Amino acid sequence: MASIKKNNDSDDRVSEILDVIMSYARLDFSKKTSFKGDDALDAIGAGVNMLGEELETSTISLKEKEQLLKEIHHRVKNNLQIVSSLLSLQTDNIFDKKYLELIAESRNRINSMALVHEMLYSSKDLSKIEIGEYIDRLCRSVHQSFSKPKSNIKFKFNVEKELFFDIDYMIPIGLILNEIVSNSFKYAFSVNKGQITVELSRSGKDYKLIVKDDGVGLPKEFDVEKDGNLGIQLIHMLSEQLDGKVNVTIKNGTSYQIIFPEK
Amino acid sequence: MDTLTPPKDAIEVSKYWTWMGNDGIGRTKTKPACEVKVSDAIENSAAVTALFTGKKFPLLIDSRNIKSMEREARKHFSTNGRETKINSFAVLVKSPLSRVIGNFFMGLNKPPVPARLFDNEADAIEWLKQYL
Image: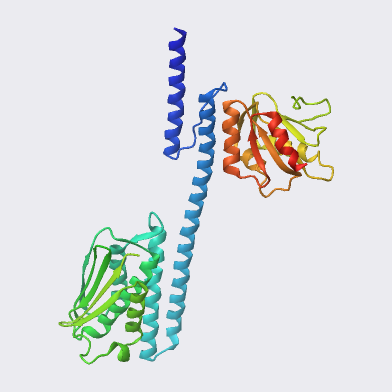
């Protein structure tokens, strides 16, 4: 009889320890095992309690670091927006169209980077963002900066769902996209009507980004090396940064295809 | 061999007795069913520091009666970033509970001075003698 009672006691104590372990697994550190004696189960219970204390401290420290990272992304975004606003303020005293365009281009580049930081601090894991949403928001922002009355330029997106990229990918991809879409707005549509298509898909270990418009295209004799403006040079430089290859096709508009590998 | 019965002139604080042995090895011993909080740890280190007479010394910690030690206390005892007057320490454990606590303390806190767990007093003293 006494032996059965002892077994029941042990079962209860083991259940209690397991209960506490499961609480810790759920990151609930409010529970602790109780122990009165000094046998093996009490020792295990004490070990579990100490493990809980260590885990709780690590979890708090991790949460604090996450908060700090969020704060940094927020501040970087704010600072980039301040730079963009300062550039905008400078345009008050500039009337030369050429300089106004240069400033607008710079602002768009800054905004494409600010958007990455904005989306990172709003994202769940703070390290990656879903590129589909980014492409949509970036293109809308570029569209707005080039919008003209009665403009009928539309976007078509075909971006694979659930594609997440970290900041090392996002900044170059964002800048590349900004340059190509801006070029389309600036040069492709003589009648303010047309379509810009953005496609991004994954095939094996490579990603394929296609940005094309159905506008008038670059002049046939256009040489990227010789005639390319800063925007085109940036597209090539940033693609290299992604270890990617750029292929430009001019047929029924301009099409950029950039294939880059997973890092 | 029993060098761990506190003498009459031992420093007595809430959870510990602390004294200097005739062999030059400091000793500190937990009271029965001892639950160590950070305040007890601070009290204990003050008592250990009071044994200092100009030369750092080895310390034998008798934890055989310990029941629990909270995290902040473990952190304090690890001596990391804290000026101490000891050059090494040996922790004496016996019961399953004191073994778990001792192993946890040693495994996670990585003391900056040589430190080891023992379940035999004579072996602990023999090991500490090299730091005299």
